[in-house]
Length: 341
Image 1 (cartoon, one colour):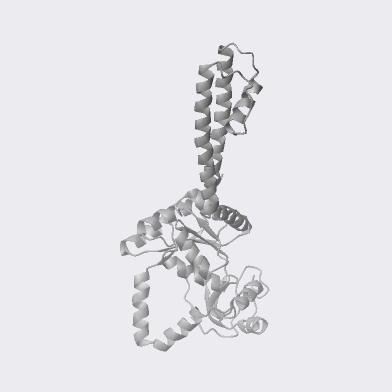
Image 2 (cartoon, rainbow, N blue to C red; image 1 turned 120 degrees about the vertical axis):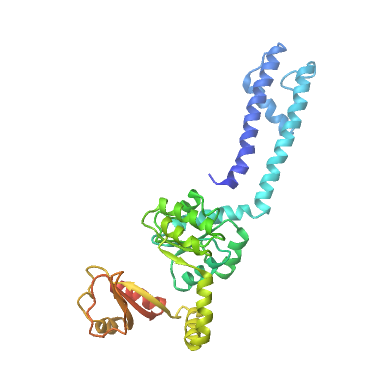
């Protein structure tokens, strides 16, 4: 059950239990005083007492100091408890928790329908840029972070953002994010230690998951690989290479920058697809693929260990499992992926 609802239900359940206990005590005291009353009448009397609607004594209290004292104590206890329930419910509405509760329910329903999506854990730095790139290239993804302010800030930039608020290292939070059916998980937590733990946790929940992580210390790289991460990025290393490229090949950097910053739906990216077994294009040439889809292959690779072949011959035959590298818009990428599926 959702934590926000538990905060409301707990005092309500306490109120019901106190009502029952008070009725039992009142019944016992009334019988002790020698009054013939039913338990139902005691429940009714306690109910109308705490509701402050006023009543005529159903049990003779005026002649019994014991029952009078019990009645006074019961009224004060119930007034405190009811005030607590009202304050909780008011906070639930005023503080936005009511909206968040239903928003979370909506996200969970959408996540249940997702398959082969990406999970970004941590959006206080690198994760923000990962989210933007996945959004611009029309990939399905879910962000997970324990800071509501960071989530809302990113939602202002990506209105269609699907998010889960919670600790990314929590098993239940990852399951809520659909880790069982996800394609990849990206660990972008603030510390290397958090990323190592997260990769271990994610790998246990879904052994088939592709795991990527960012790291700051060179000593962490081997730990992340042992934990199961296959894609590792060091932001400081990437930054250093970028500065060097700015100096020696500025036009290339500008070209890539413009391409990556293009937020139009028609914007292009360097993309890749893998030719599936049994594809209709297996045995045909790259030129045939170009005529069919309008996408020009700029490099290809046959097998994970093989070297890339740049500017491949247009007459080169398409093979099962071949990785094609090309520049295309998200729409053309989808068309090519469907063509070689």
